[in-house]
Length: 128
Image 1: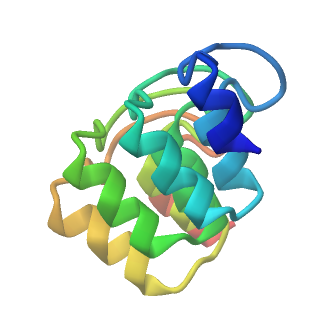
Image 2: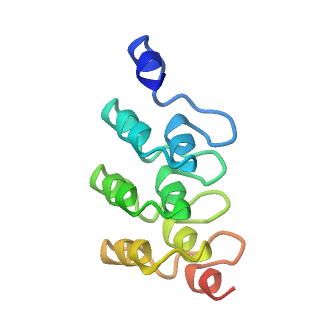
């Protein structure tokens, strides 16, 4: 269905709704194939909005390590701030995901002291 809509001119970066855009909605649902389709059609990896704030935060929250890597390779801002989780490192830490995503983000330069979200920073979120 996604491919049909895109082929008829659906705006891959349209904003609105709970998740902010189609890319974040696909991430929230764990739909890796749709994420790849949207990225191939030019989905903005740094678009802000929705529940998680941006795609990298949504992928980090959902524990999607392969998608995190793909988003980073497409230029996702590793320290982008936004919404509930503050940033991607905070999101991965707060949700208690295995060390893979946290390590990915740290190895790519995530700011361990970035402030934001309910608990203030990633260490606080991981400790809560």
